Length: 84
Image 1 (spheres, one colour):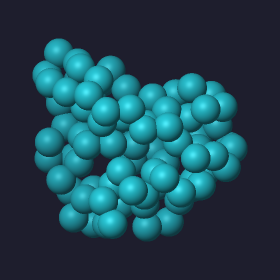
Image 2 (tube, rainbow, N blue to C red):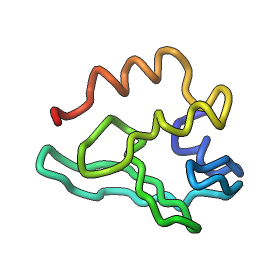
Image 3 (tube, rainbow, N blue to C red):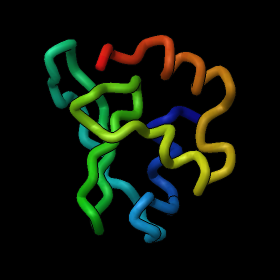
């Protein structure tokens, strides 16, 4: 299952709501383009392809959602993250 597909299911957001995230493709930052998700309740944006200081870190969702990222996906996310 791709990372994008994981966010098509109901998940628990950091705002303490169970929601289905909206997926937004191709949002640009200073380092390139991202796929991000947005919570329809709190409207926070999370970068799901790599860490970016312009958006919330999707790894913050892991404590609320078991198996959201595999160990390999988490490692890739961190390796490809932008500098702060």
